[in-house]
Length: 123
Image: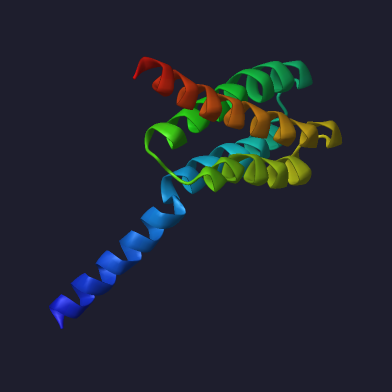
C-alpha cells in the first residue's frame, strides 16, 4: 500500500511541476490577493498606481520572464502572471488597471527574450 501511495504522490508532484505551481502561487498572491487587500485597506490611488502597479508588479513581470527562460520552462508560462493579474484587476481594482495586464505580458516577454539574447551573445 505504501509504495502505491508514494508513486501516486510522485505523479502528483510531477504534474504540479509540469504546470509550474510556483508561478501559479506567486501569480495568485500578487494578482488576486494583493489587489483585494489593497482595495479592502483603501490605499491612496497614487500609491496604488505608482508603488504597486508600476514598481512592484513591473519588477515581478521582469523577474518572472527572466526566471522562466533561465530554468528552461515552457514559453506559455509567460501568460500565467498577466492572466491572473487581469482577473484580480477586473475584480478588485479600477477599470483602467486592466490594461496593465498587457504591459506585464510585454515586460515578461521582453525580459524573456533579452535573457535569451544575452546567453547567446555570452557563449
